[in-house]
Amino acid sequence: MALKLSVVGCGYLGATHAACMSSLGFDVVGVDTDPEKIALLSKGELPFYEPGLDTLLATEIKTGRLKFTTDFSAVAEADVHFICVGTPQSKDGLAADLSYVKSAVTAIAPHLKSGSLVVGKSTVPVGTAQGLREQLTQSAPQADLAWNPEFLREGFAVEDTLTPNRLVVGVANDRAEEILKEVYKPIIDLGTPWIRADLPTSELVKVAANSFLATKISFINAMAEVCEAAGGDVTVLAKAIGYDPRIGNRFLQAGIGFGGGCLPKDIRAFMARAEELGAKQALEFLREIDAINLRARQRVIDVVRAELTEDLTSYTIAVLGAAFKPDSDDVRDSPALDIAAQLQAAGAAVVVHDPKAIENARKRFPNLGFAASVEECVKDSDLILHLTEWREYRDLDPKALASLVKKKIVIDGRNALDRDKWRAAEWQFHALGRTD
Ligand code: UDX
Image (cartoon, rainbow, N blue to C red; front, side):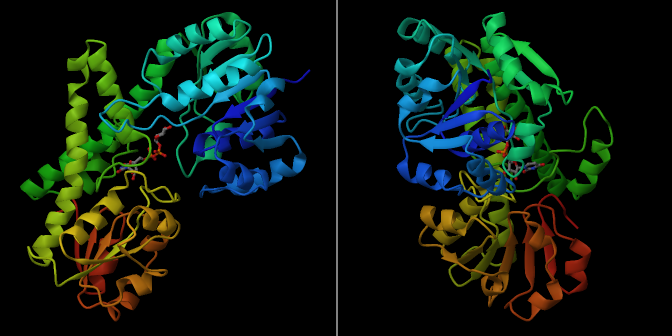
């Protein structure tokens, strides 16, 4: 008999995982405490923007294999339970808040049938899985617990779930591995590398990967600072070092740095956990990675002041982009929105445009100005700041925009616009890490 699955926590990760597992042919029940989210998902509607997931969800709901509910007892029929709840940064420090993970496991424990496997996918501090396993085997000795970190990127969530570049499972015994192999058979059959690890290593893989990615971005942003001081061009530098296959050209896009729901909080939680483990020194460098990242936001504001004046009160600034990256409506720790809010706090009139993230941005900063189109956003502005590299911004016609603005100044905070095109249309063009 085919395994039945449950997914606990139907946010970004859980909704994606549930729909993708259903598309592999499993019966899946998604459970969440938020009735609004569950009502939407049950109708086949996504509570957030993710390319491709909307159609997949709607299709899977129609098959009848995929269901959503707020009733935790619905997990009783399932054999494998994926924990996909959030682990945000705690309010009082750098560490991750594990309360959602703990309450998810506690909520399903009484309903677990014999032989079932609980599989954590949330990003947790190393040691959490072992602790949860001990707790679970006391309250529900008929069940076992494994960890299976998720590497999905927003904007590519479906692709990263169904064709990941590896599957990592942290297990305490062969049986748990066999169950997970059964779940992921269609993906393994595609030739996807399978890595079996112990529980702590599987937890570490995730935070190590995100730390490495954050380091790569902050490295190139540090080089951008040096280029600015020395009169160089970081985009040329990145291209040149990226040809070395040991370095690689991905994640070397200099600009206003990383944000989102993962990278910033994961490196902070990793530092906090290392300190608890007595390995603080090993991750001291991440403090610098974080500092370089936050400095990039400040540097772009410095360029704005240099182009206008120290006192920004009489200026209108058009901000293109609010999401933390393109193809997402996520504004969690978004560098773009942070910069917009800081400029407004400094006295500028700020008008923000984003193809998908306006609603979320407005919830966070209701007093910022928002525009429904690029034209409306840039109208009568003294300066355009390009902060999230959506395709439609790259395709803009600087000649057409010229007649709308007060001053033709553009600052590219993502090194994604075509400098020659903007200069040919007589714009003053500046970008982070490029002195020319
Ligand atoms: C990340 C990891 O990539 C993913 O594997 C993990 O599972 C979750 O965290 P995500 O948060 O979706 O995914 O975003 P990612 O594509 O990694 O980008 C993170 C941030 O870095 C964005 O703000 C992006 O704009 C920025 N970035 C990325 C750069 O500033 N420069 C780059 O070269 C690449």
